Amino acid sequence: MGRPLLAIRHSIREAWEGLWRNPALSILSAASIGISLYVLGLFLLLAFNLNRFVEALGRETQVQVYLLENVTRDTLSDLRAEFATDPAISSVRFVSKEDARLRFQRDFPSLRDLPDRVGSNPFPSSFELEIRDAYRDPDSLDRIAKSYEKAPGVEEVRYDRGWTERLVGIVALVQRGGYGLGVLLALAALVTVGAVVQLTVLARREEIEIMKLVGATAAFIRGPFLLAAAVQGLVGGAIAVAGLFVTHRLVERADVFRSNPFMSLVAGRFLPADAATMLAAGGAALGVLAAILSLRRAGTF
Amino acid sequence: MIQFFHVSRKFPQGTLALTDVSVHIEKGEFVFLTGASGAGKTTFLKMIFREDVPTSGQVVVNNEDVATMPSRRIPYLRRQVGVVFQDFKLLPRKTVFENVAFATQVIGLPRKEQRSRTYQVLEMLGLNHRLHNYPEQVSGGEQQRMAIARALVNKPLILLADEPTGNLDPDLAKEIMGLFKDINSHGTTVIIATHDRELIRRMSRRVIALDHGRLVTAAVA
Image (cartoon, rainbow over all chains, first blue to last red; front, side, top):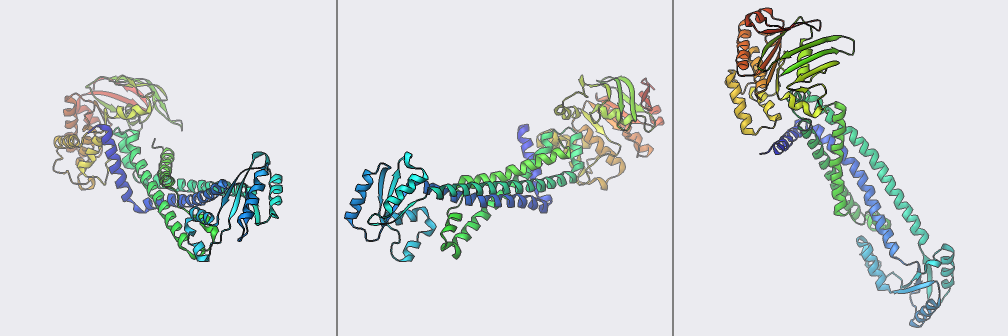
């Protein structure tokens, strides 16, 4: 077996022994990383689902003309003719009641039973008006909306641009808040894991001193500590992801969630697989970073 | 093999451990380093394996200036130098076998070779009946031999011993010195720091004498 492989085998063996030599410290390290990643993950989950909502809104056209329940074909034709002569409108799409229901169930899968529970299809039919760029300022949108509000067959005219911008702002705030809190907790985890590594170095200082005196390289001495910290961090990250999944499931099943459309925004979908993997890997990286900083402070190399 | 060129060592609190020491030690020599307590013997030895560096001057070991050597080279220097400490520095939670084999692990020897070298050196030092005992379960002389075994297991070019017979009775001390003689006869350069004059007289080897950090003599006894 080559020397690098022997060194790796040594690191694995020593790291494993180190993890079990003092299980309480190992658990403390994993838990502190797990907690910081769990909180970060909660904010990521919230931001992820808010982003989805914003993107869904982004697909929406600029102005929606909601129609009365009993609108006739002739009224629909008249409205289409009016839209065709309006220079502000670039395209028109008709969304039937059934189309609207299907769209809702697609965008909010956890609430797909809601329309059936209400009884009849509660979604109105509508015209979605794509507005030309030149007319997309709030004043023009306001004017366009007002011009169709009183038209026959029209129940309500809405344009959500301001709301979308506000929501984008909220998403950014949530993300910043999450990152800020995550960074604080990550620093706390760094300190905790660093302290654990220092305690371990202290407990093994005799051995380390002799290793140095008989010719052990820095990598040979550092390897087991870094590997053990990476494992603790990975376990912490995995616990965070598992905790997030359980939280997500609990929120999904809770009554307050099922009747509250906003809660679906908070926990509609779980994090995608790559984000969850990054979170767990982030735990390992955090553990290794803490170990490196701590070994430097201990003067081990 | 080992050369000191005008080496001085001043500690931060102002103590002069060594002052302008220049000496050459050839390959395969057996040398006693002597002087009263505080003469600078331990500091002298530490410089050879880069546990300490001179404030001024040069220490050259095997054609390499150890003071200016990059940190990453230090482990490789130390693999060429076996050190027997006054306090043995044995690991209490490892057996006799494990304490010695430890030195072979850090240099990355294959497991099989770790075992065979360790058995060989323990047999040479008469410790093959103590393999599974812990340091506290063996005698002072056996602990000393464990320390020597660990220093020798990687076949160093140089063997340093700091007061190796300090804690031993005269018969045991004689036995240990016999071991060092034997090791030296196989080509290893041996430097023994001691203030035991009787020992030095009996062995009739080259003596490097220090007095308050200064070289007094570097001749044959």
